Each structure stands twice: as C-alpha cells, then as structure tokens.
Length: 64
Image (cartoon, rainbow, N blue to C red; front, top):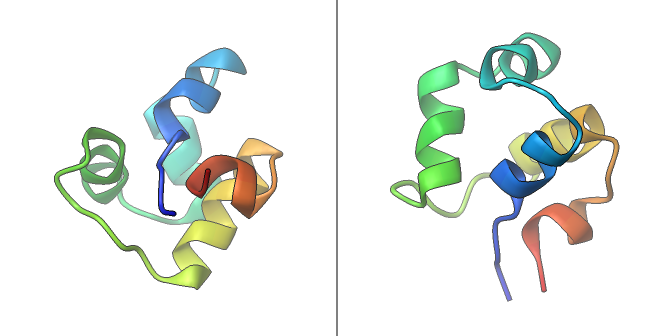
C-alpha cells in the first residue's frame, strides 16, 4: 500500500527540500506537494529518483 515517508527520511538524513530537488531534477514545488500528500501517485520513475537520492529503497520510502 502506498505510504509516503519522504519528509521523515529527508529530515532524518539532514537534507533540505532544495537539495533533494537538485539531486533528483524534480521541482521543489512538486516534491513539497508529494511530502504534504496534496499530490499522490507519482510515477515509478519519480519515486525511483527520490528513493535513490535519499539513499533508501523505493519500498522503504513509498510503501508499507
């Protein structure tokens, strides 16, 4: 089941939203929407970029 832990993991490793944006090439606005849950169901490509940038598995970041 989809469960977004982006913000929790990002803060845990001390990364800003701006840094995550730079590493992934994804806009800060879109990342912010994903973190807040106002935007759901990102593509697998987007989830993979985010997980890689956070140094975690896709399953750990986005699924229970």
